[in-house]
Image 1 (cartoon, rainbow, N blue to C red):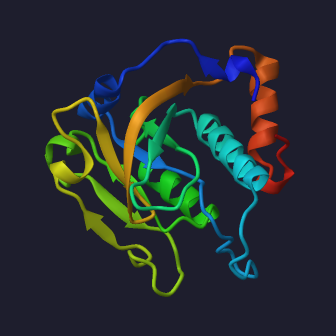
Image 2: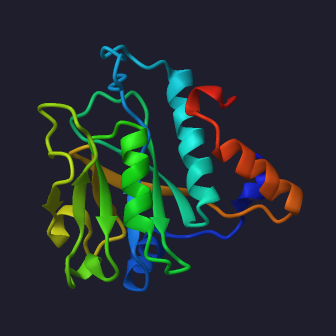
Amino acid sequence: MKKDFCQSKELSLPELWALNMVHDCGAITSYTKMDNSPGGEGRLFSEKENQQRDKTLRIKLINLEYLVVEVRGTMPGCEVGSPVSCYFVADHHDRGELSWDITALGEYFYQGSVLLVPKSGVNNVGEGAYLYGTSHSIGNKIGYGEKFFLDKNQWGGESTILTGCINGNPLIFDQVQRIYGMPGTGYGVWGLRVLAQMDWWEIKV
């Protein structure tokens, strides 16, 4: 993805956490070891395929005009060779469509679940943070369309480490990589719109 999709402003983990005080937020990854799509038959994804999926997710989130923050995290107990790339997303325009968009992308990438945090949910105000099941697979940890609510100790705390849960597994957000936003030129926006309509296997890395 071209550099003009990336904003230069740095954001610390506490600032990331504080975004939820004023906006609905969520978190999603495209990472998965196996192809869980119909006909995928559980084959292993290659590193390149996971890179294509990651880039596609990033493009689609930016195209939806959310504040998109790339975060690297680790999944304790999971057999992942390198830190997992995850996207923390804030509805900074307050359109109220984030839960719909994130769950739709969770289905598209055959994720077991996505993390949704309604405004102020970090402090367990209102509905609070929860995992939403996005997989139709039998035996998934969270049933399709089900909500699994998290208490504050399960997803965030008073420290600078923000924790979440992706695909039913604990994910520790330990490093903010970069912030993405809409391109600054009309040509850049046009290019983004074109890429956002492509499937992940069509994206070059």
